[in-house]
Length: 350
Image 1 (cartoon, rainbow, N blue to C red):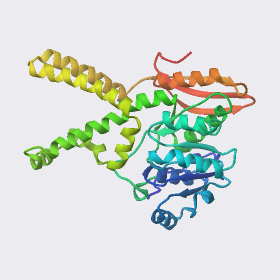
Image 2: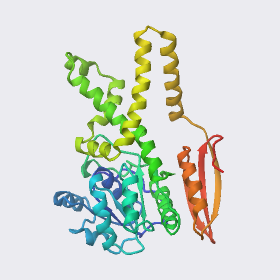
Image 3: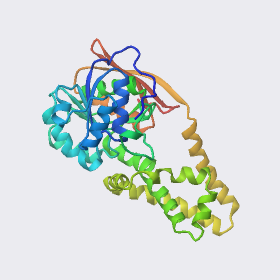
Image 4: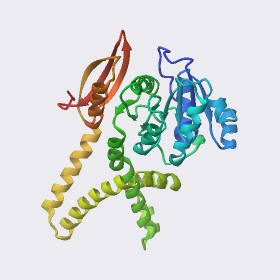
């Protein structure tokens, strides 16, 4: 567990704010370290006693019970395994103050968001997912820089929930220097299936095929950047990957079908010895890769009344995120909420 990132939030806006992180593995531990670097009063709790002891040895506050960790906190981030989040959300909601903002970092959003709605937690709970990770696990692998400049999905809702979204969006931007991507839970799960979940299937398939190859050891000896990059996430703990894939199963299978269809087109061109078709298909793929590495954005400032039911505000936020945009600032001043938005050139939502 390292704290090699420089402390963010130079203005000290968040100094002293009381926060808690529930689940201090790779992601939770990294969140804990960054919050502490920003001067927040942060406690970490993990169900594993050994992990709590390790956190204390590193100078972090790590109470013995979850209730102690979240009591009196202004914000609680749920960072445990995906299958545990629903039960943990209920436990935290009971133990934390009623004005405490709750969020999570789970890799799927629709199911947990619906669960929160059924239990009357929409006004406090903002579903979230920072798009970052590593092929290692546990608190010992955590670093304050892991989430630096990440795309961090937050799911806004109408009514009182919008106030929680605004507060949390400002925290994420200021403390983590993140790009807040506002989306509906359903749109997040659809986009994440192809952006994050299907790549785990492909990495597993490539690494698994190499394991069963007749010349396995020779394959590994020759493996260079393309194989290493293509199989990196196959190093993620298997149980965590399985939970993620099953949690978004239908959308992952839909995304995989699209990948399979394109792969079949590549294979068909290869079988036919059709160099022109093969080149054209790879030109399509190259264009997408180039857009990932360098894409121009238009920047604008959008304002909304801080009061009301916020339906127009939430609709605009979701259009921004679904269109590939993000937020770099959120401020509420004198009855007005102001967002600094960045949308792919020529696509800013009305």
